[in-house]
Length: 271
Figure 1 (cartoon, rainbow, N blue to C red):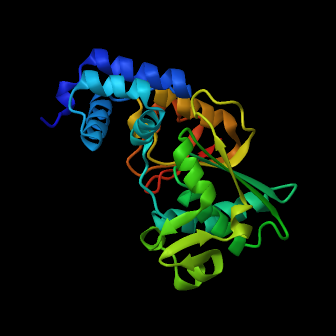
Figure 2 (spheres, rainbow, N blue to C red; figure 1 turned 60 degrees about the vertical axis):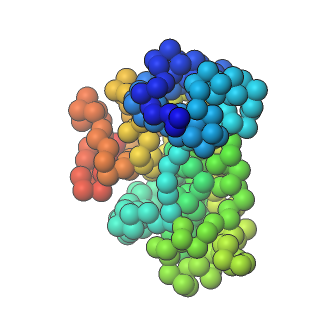
């Protein structure tokens, strides 16, 4: 019988997240329980293991499946220039303002929860068009907790459907096309530094002018959301920008630190 998320008890939820915590140093204890049940049931269906006991035993003996479960719990569907208006604002308003007030012609980005790399490479395309890493220096740190996603991001190979928001000219300039697969060109890859990193518990990455973390907090409970936004507020330079997903809301206790400058596009500025 195909499992439903109601078949997975709270006790097993704890066992699954404890196993992930020990292996990957991630904390899913604050995640929405219904979300966890649905995603675990999804992996059980994919592996055709319909007993919770047997799936737990399978996880103990299969590092690959444990990694796939982690990926299923942290999956973030993305594409290049997702929500193009946001990237237009970054290019035409945010970057020029930061550079105008910069003393060293340097700008630092952090894309947190970068998944397979579409978002940081989109930033790299914008920065390349603006002449960065020629006359001005840009640093893009892209982080995720999923090894498989990071491996794919470093490889930089994408289906054409992921590039639907890019012009034919951009595809030609920034990618090698081979049999319908698009590989990011090496000069663009060099603009992005991929790191395995936990937003909540990872080491300090330094200060940033812009932090982008879209559609991550929706998986967290209130306590972990608070911890995440506290970190972002601490890690932004004064006047730096935080960009979150359109369905996300920053807790009111951060109103005095992170001021909304574009509510429609969920863009905030540290004051």
